[in-house]
Amino acid sequence: MNEKDTSQFSKYRILGLVGRGQFGKVLCARIRDTGKLVALKELEHKRFPTSKLLRELRFLLTLQHKNIVACSALVHHQNYRYLVMDYCEGGTLRDLMNYTKMLSVHQCFNLIDDILQGLEHAHAANVIHCDIKPENVLLKITAKGWLAKISDFGIARLSQEIDSDGSNTGSPGYMAPERFYGQFSVGSDIYAVGIILYELLVGKRPFSGMPTELMNAHLNQRIVIPETIPRSLQAIILKSLEKLPKRRYTSAQEMRLDLLKTIRSEDFSQIKIGTDAESCETILFYQKAEHFAQKHESEKIVGLVGAEKSRFYSTSGLHLQWHSLTLDQGEQIAKSECQIETIAFARKTLFALTNRSIYQFVQGKPKSLYQSNQPFQWAISPQGDWFAVSTGKQLEIRNLLYGRAMRLEFATRALSCIIAFDRHHLVAIANKPDTNESRAIVISRRCNIMYRFALPIPIDYGIATFTSDRVLLREASNHKNIFFLDLKPYRLARISLQYEVLIMVATPWGYAITAYYNAYQTILILLDLRGNNVSNLIIDGEVTAIAPIDINLLAIATSEISGYKLYAINLKKLNIDIVF
Image (cartoon, rainbow, N blue to C red; front, side, top):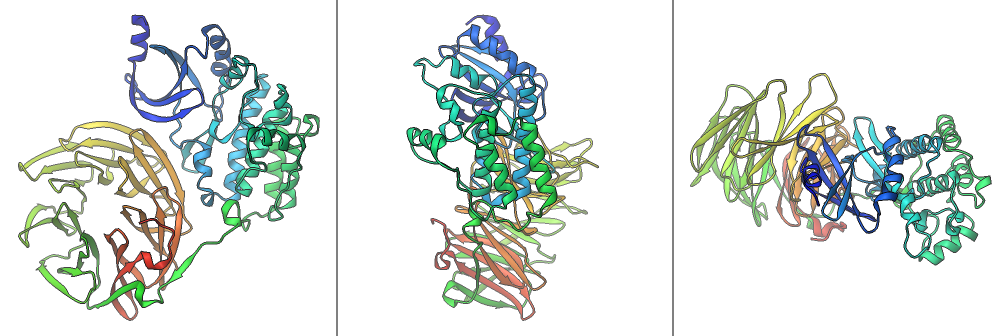
């Protein structure tokens, strides 16, 4: 490797491993000069000889379209080449398809429409992909939804040409019949899109099994589509999956126009897709006393926090109390002069917050840490050794061990929320005025800005999670959308819920989220660590606070017509599909 190769690669700061593809590792990197995020796709030198690789690169460099992942450069490092490509923070379509319950029919159509638009552009340039599959469709997050972009153009075909043993390569689950004989055409890519459309709507591919079984199925077996799919959609799927290429759609544009015509002429809002077609949401009602302990309160509970096994703290108005698991007793710790709005517990240290102050409890007595004449955002480190507050465009971090305070000023953006996601760092979210965008700024506890990410949506609320370097955010303009933001490397995943999110709480097994169900009830939504909805519970009244108090126990405070109540719910007894 020469010095030029080294200097090329040194232009990029590696931020982390995104995944592993069939050609090698995929890295997230930042261009040092501009700060732009890119993906570095690894290609092994022995597998991709220089002459053939350069010949195929012309396809990647000339295909410029919003639905195709652009390639901007080729860099060398040691025995590898790296393609410098667009970074797609939403992951792959395969990642999204693992959460089928999140997608509506219209969202499925939009994704297929994006893929077909990308293919339409490529086919016009006489470029055939040859390996269309969900793993090769990457996603950008936008304010309106997902933008699908096809990746690996040229490289997919190159791998076919230089396969060492002469056998046909590809992904058997998505291969058109002629592909098993080494032939390909525009219709081969359309066939693969038909398989993806079937999988999005039905929840599984039409054929499964070992490669030999798949080949036989693609060549000979008839496509069977469930009757739950409307006949207009069935006709489109069947035409795209004809065995003979001449009977399929003649172009990606023809298939795309058929889909657009169908979705405009019919109402698909009631169709259950994927796993939703096989099972409905489970809603459980509180009717069995053994599932929870209950206590009536004289005041509205406005904050809860889990402290340690079988114990937790609550605040109702001016009183701060601790409770045992059975809820048959409570001990008042302090009576505040101000309305306590929330409390936090960090490494056996208790904090209480009002709309103007932060208190730390030392030997059961409150000690004032911060006073402000205006409302503020706050974050407390998991170790309880520092906290941060923001008022408008100013951020202040105070070290409780050494009594030091450091400040940052932001010129144009006010901070909508700040989250301490580990003992050394916090992430601040700054919304851009008059746009649907925001910025995530990772800041050290010494008040140094580490790096920034542009987010395509505004954010108004967020929490830390039990997953390393991950925070959970709520979209400001649509409270039904929440997002997993992974910070190392940067990834963004949208979870669309049926109800508007009010409170979010992280637990070791997942997330407990409350939302309005109707004027008299609240729905408690339980998600696993990947964001899958595992169960919903209907609760009478308004849930005013929630906190985990053990691996399988939740404390929930409610306000209803009959008064204020405090529950301790044992999730093990509710037949919920969570492994504790």
